[in-house]
Length: 93
Image (cartoon, rainbow, N blue to C red):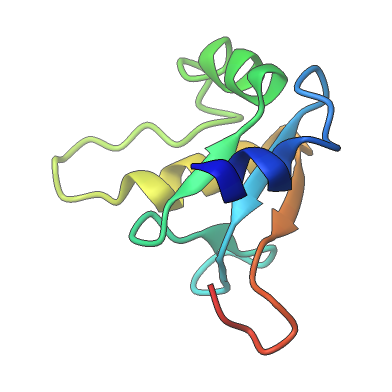
């Protein structure tokens, strides 16, 4: 936890930010892997929460066989939330 807090310290929680290990599958801008985990700033959570019911912004899956990390990635892309890949220069999580 200490490393995570140290990493996030310079970022403003009132700016819409999305952190994680980026996947590029099926979404041109990519999305953050849910397996490795991702972080949303306070403002990003607010924007996503107020847009979940808008099918023009967030997908509206009709079955239970969907992936939450991908669906959050769709919302983030459509809301123009800044995505920050947290992998190091050796592309390690």
